Amino acid sequence: MHNMLTFFSSITGSLPYIFSGLWITVVLIIGAMGLGLLIGIPFSVIRVYGHPFARRCVALYVWFFRGVPVLVLFYLFYFGLLSWLDQIPALDFLPLGDAFFAAILVLGMTTGAYQTQIFKGAILSLPQGQLKAARSLGMGDISAITSIILPQALRFSIPAWTNEYSIVLKDSALAYVIGVAELMSRTRSVAAITHKPLPFTLFAGLIFFILTWAGVKGLKRLEKKMQIQGYTQ
Amino acid sequence: MTQPNGTGPVVLEARGIVKELGGNTVLNHVDLTLAKGDLKVLIGPSGSGKSTLLQCLNLLHIPEDGQLLLDGTPVNFKKKTDLYQLRQKVGMIFQDFNLFDHLSAHQNVAIALKKVKKQSKKQAHDRACEELARVGLADKMELYPAQLSGGQKQRVSIARALAMDPEVLLLDEPTSALDPELISEVLVVIRDLAKAGMTMLMATHQISFSAGLAHKFVFMENGRITEQGVPSALLAENSGSRTRDFCAKISELTGAEA
Image 1 (cartoon, rainbow over the protein chains, first blue to last red):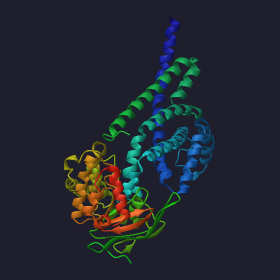
Image 2: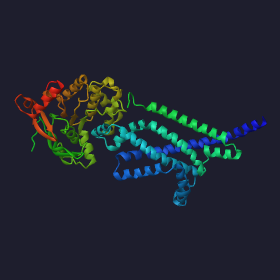
Image 3: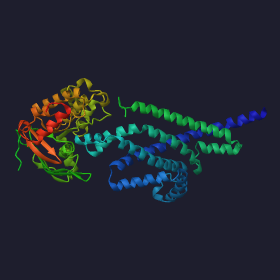
C-alpha cells in the first residue's frame, strides 16, 4: 500500500512540471504554423503565376525541406548553420543561439514547404474562368490574385491545413533533441529521474492527443464559418 | 481599308489577328471592325475560332501577330497598363458565367468598381444595386452564385460587365450553357442592350434571335472570316451562302427555327 502511494505521488508530483511544457509546445506550434503561412501563401502564388526562375527557386526550396527529415534539420540548423551565423556581429539582434528560435525556424520552414504545395493545389483546383473574369474586368494580376483567387483557394485549403497542423504538432516533439524544454523534453527528464517512463509518456501522449483534437475541432469550426454559401465542389 | 458599317465611328478594330494555340493556328489573319452601336454576330462551327477571337479582342489571349485599335489608337500588347485599360473598356460575357463564387451577386458587381475604378464603397454599392435592378435581379442581390439559376447568373455577369461602363461588350455564347427555359430571360436583357445602342459582338447559335437584331452576321470557319453580310441577305433562300447551309444544319439538329 505504501509503495502504491509513493508511486502515485511521484507521478502526480511531476505532472505540473510536464504540463508547463505545454505552453512552450503551443507557442512552438503557433510560431511554426504562422511562419509556414507567411512562406506558403506567397510561394504558392509564385509557383502558379510567377516567372520561370522564381518558380524554380521555390521548387528547390520545397524539394529540400520536404526531402530532409525534421530531426536532421534540427541538428543541421542548431549545431550548424545558426551557430555559424551567430558569430556574425551584424546579426546580434536575432536570438540565433536560442534552441527555441531554431526550432520555430526549422518547423516553420518545413511546414512552409508543405503549405506551399497545399495552397498551390487549391489554387490550381479553381476553375480557370475565375481569373479570366477578373482580368476581363480590367483587374491587374495582383488584385485578381488577392481578391478573387486566394480567398477561394485558402478556404478550400483548410482541411489539408488541419492535417498539416497535426503533423507539425507531432514533429514539435522532436525539438527535445536540441534542448527545447517542451512537453517531450520534460517528459524524458522526469522519466529519467524517476525511472518510470511509462506513466509520464502516457501523460504526454494524452496531452498531445488533446492538443490535436482541440486544434482539429477549432479548424473545423473555422471551415464551417468560412464556407461559401450554397457551394458544393 | 475597312469601312465602318455601323451608324457611328469605329470603336474597336482588329487587323490581321493571328493566334496559335497548342501548335495550331486558331486565328488566321482575321480582320474585324466594330463601329459604335454595331451589333455583329459571330456564327460558325465549333473550333472555328469564335471564342478565341473574342478573347483576343480583350487581350485575354495575346495574338502572335496583328493589331488591335481602340478608338483609333493601337494597343501595345506588351504593356500591362495598356492591357488593363483596354479591358476596362471592352467587357466580356462568358458562356460559363464565371461569377466569383465567394462573393454575393451584389459584391460580384461591386468588386471591380472598387478595385479597378477605385470607387468608394458607397459609390460601388449604389451602382451595383442599379445594375442589378436593370437586369431584374434587385431581390437577389445578397444571394451567392451557387444559389442562383443559370439565367440569373448570366444576368449578374451582364450587370457586372455593364457596371464598368464599357464601350464594347463581347458575348461568348451567352446562352449556350443555359436550359432552354432560362434562355429567354437573358435574351431579353441582350435585346434591351442592343436597342439602347450598346456596341456588341456576340458569338451564338441563337440564329433566329440574332437575325432580328444583328446589323451583320460574321461567319467564321477554320480560323478565318469567310462570309460577312446582312442577316436577311445571307439567310435568303437562294443566297447559296455557307451561313445559310450552317444555320439550316443547326435547325435540323435542334429542331429550332433557323
